[in-house]
Length: 166
Image (cartoon, rainbow, N blue to C red; front, side, top):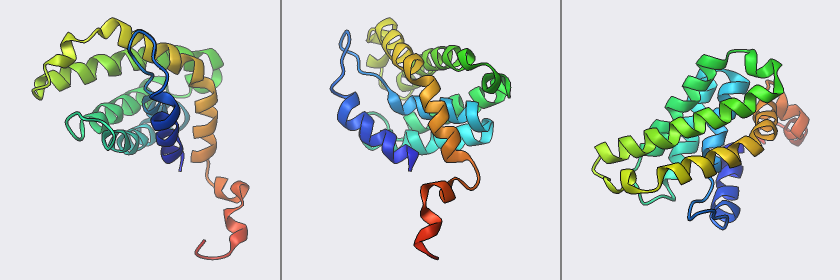
């Protein structure tokens, strides 16, 4: 559900925001937050789902976002451990670094797959815009993803009160 909400926000509000010709990649923030909140497996799974969802809207090689987001989600979860859960400011730093790595990885893999224009785009502007937006939204997104990943969170959302099968 969180991935769907992220996709709706990205495809409605995110595409209207442009700074230096670049729009933020809010879907990238989901696997980063999942890696921080749930570890490497959750980060990779959310990264795959978020990337696959984002690929439905992009005119780029299908699966490229899913691959990059999975790698980033796994790497964030494996490298941060419980440190990012203990220090609120570390989530911001991780979001900036992981966003920068993801943008560069996406461009390099896209070029390898025949999309050479990915390396000719203004990568510095792309890194700056994506990393800045993800830094601002990092702590809130980590909280939302942590809530969504928490066992029994469906009880808090009221899903269990609808009866079996709902």
